Length: 296
Image (cartoon, rainbow, N blue to C red):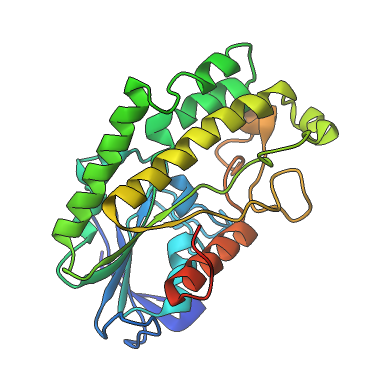
């Protein structure tokens, strides 16, 4: 069955589907300096790119993309000629360039072509063990959290492998896109402040041991450094996310979830960006692209 769907926000029209992607045509006017008319924007990444309100998850979309995820937020602000959302929950770096085990999906790189002049990439956490962090530190906390968080520190063989794979992925995107493509690597919204004592009452309510925050900080600094180094090596932009309004603060940019996460699935969207978080991150990326925000 072929469906034509009008998306209310931004009056964008869904003009294609299948093979695990969603493709939109906007108003054909680009408001991004140096982004020519007719240019395409492609959003790539994992659940931190695909998350949003989760009320807006498209039916039968195994990638659990939201109509208010990071790519949609940025596309509404920049108004490229077309926008393709290739982000997919659970994606690793492998999924950007190789077939995914998810049915009806294809490598995210297939969304990039000769008219692609802007690509945002938010990926790498799952390749560096974020799934184990969720399971051992937050979903069902146990004594192995510290070991898991410190398994692949910067400079270790595992960390270096992911770094090299990330760099190769950026190279592949550049080869597939227009010669003047602007590639933006995006960092992960933090669950907790990187310094200072954590909110013990908040953590207790979520069933998360206080010491697990320090373990998570070790892991987070590793992924943040990895993405920043790849961006510097490949001469592309790195947008470090806002550090405020973490999970235990009012109107947070990320949900917590904690020990109840498993029981809440599949409705839970814990440990992922909120609508407010995606808007804030989208605003920051837009400002960086327009040159109105300082470098990360």
